[in-house]
Length: 112
Length: 116
Image (cartoon, chains in turn brown, purple):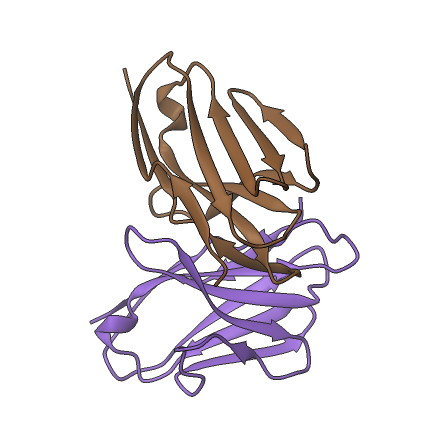
């Protein structure tokens, strides 16, 4: 069974701190996606990681992909309150692009 | 990035009635569109996959007679929730895939359905 596991599921951080969200998956997919979701909103695409060793950075967020370990990380640097949201990772199902299996999401709360 | 427009953003309907949700790709032709459902505080679960001009493929446990999907053109897919019940209340999100780009699917804004 294809699984995408995120941890932690809940993360409460103080502003200025660093932390990493982990995403493990069981498929052989070499493509992984990170999304942000604000309450009541749809998904906002953060990163598309297309190959082993891919690393992408945008602002205080950096994502990486290790397809051999089937692991992706989303690193948060010097967190700010505006980063509070739920973050999902997802992989393509059975090599069917666009057909995504999502992790359960990590609810991030950044406190002053 | 490409734009996918979903309409309506929210809808309240009475139990037993039907509701139609539209998903449009505004600036590209979507080879495939996907419909997801998200219950409160949960992740997204795929309901069905639709390809233009063919029948939708439903995930296990999703009633195809209750959730009617039509993908009549390369820019429009519709999801009709028939005979809605309160347990159908959820956040429905569509996404669209363009095969020649082959990078990612683009998500609509979502539709909050409340059945009373």
